Image 1: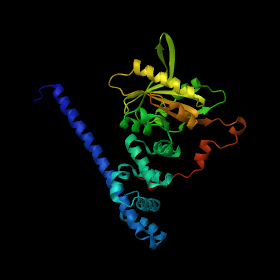
Image 2 (image 1 turned 90 degrees about the horizontal axis):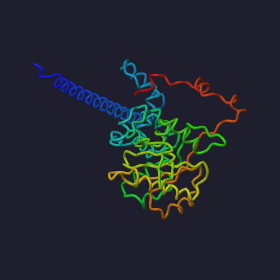
Image 3 (image 1 turned 135 degrees about the vertical axis):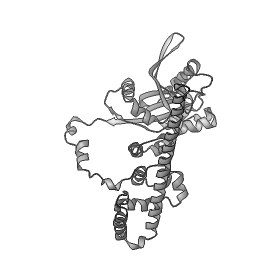
Image 4 (image 1 turned 90 degrees about the vertical axis):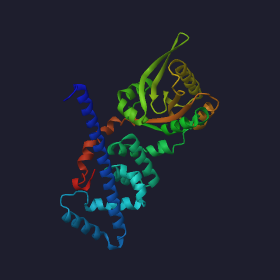
Length: 343
């Protein structure tokens, strides 16, 4: 006999949680097994390359005949399996990284990335951030690897932050930032860009990366009865600190670093809690002028990074009706056969 409704609901919630966790584990394990199978099939195909391309066509037909209800072994997909096995020649590497992604993710990587180290970087970022296949494709198309992993970043993070926070902060920074969801127009000022960024907050947070939490735009600070306004203020959940972003529509100037130093000091005094790490500043300019930025940051005590940002240019009016629209292009593309894809 039930002693109370609360006890029953507690038991029900516990069981529901265990079912959900188990379902998720089953899906993950099933996907890992499937990717492992694709690797083994691809490896076997590669071992018999001398049999020619017709051999893969015959293999696809025979597999379909033997397993008529199983999709994913089309001629095209078998080629992808062979390519997959040739890229990752160690099954252990496959199980550690690519097998944690869907096959569609892996096909995206094979289609868009040529270097295995870069593939593994994108794969790990996808696992870490939970990117869909479409988001992964967008990140590759905007060259995130070059902008974040191997970018020549202009900061003083190493000198001004503890080692672990410094490395994470450098990994977080991109150069340039791509705000391709904003159309650049002549005469735009910083406020216009800020407004457009916050109007597209989902895209902005995606471009900034995992961990950024929006605090405010034109965030008000008062110092000695004078008013100051921070362009964009964020809190980073992994760095555990406030991040001040200052937008500049022109080239970097040394005085920008001094103003950012002031903002960071004020945020540290007025907003930062004892459990927070030191506030970080990011100066976003249309052109950063690397050497000038390095000189400006060298002796500052606050952690600041300087990066460029890019926006989409608006087409001249006379060209708008000449170039094909996205719908025109999409209508001309052949969508892949449904059987060619496996999640």
